[in-house]
Image (cartoon, rainbow, N blue to C red):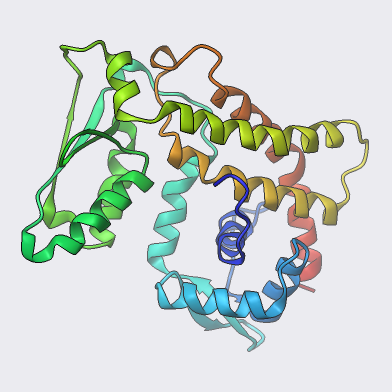
Length: 277
């Protein structure tokens, strides 16, 4: 998961990093011309036909909408749903705060009629994609801080009629740390963090050995690092530290990404600005 740099994923990553607001001013960014998007994705190894086909798929999914730029060029902007999706993602991707044990949990309890059983699979897939663990059949659990994002997601997908959401505490009978090890595959999540570290720690060391930060190199390395990282806070929902195994690699991978973000993001924005001229 951590290194699947598909064209579609990279386009979403670009819009999340640079296609909503200007890093310098915070002002909203208008539609991105198709020609510019092709140049921006070429910098990370994506060819023009792949950009065009991926944009078409994102348009069909309702994430991108065609709009003309101020100069009249054909371009694409984020839909309202896509902006909500990315705004929700920011709270995970850029957060440096791990929840406390007493923050509690959100439970998603769902029941889908047999006549609509296809929605059962979609529900399970979406809850898993949000980082929920499985407490029991039809009962999924996540840290309470994911409540708002879960509500937004289920409503956007029109799955909310099948689900009840609850906030609460785990009161036993199994120790919470033991229960968490049943609800999530912690070994698989740890492996994703290790894979991220294997790829991105050398990148960070290389940048920290340099005195310069060229815009084109910064943009390329930041977009690839962000594209790898942004999936991890969904596979790993951010469990309280006292519930995790010793030597948990998630803290280290979060630090590596935070340092790459601090070093590269603004320099990458300069590359985007130059590419738009």
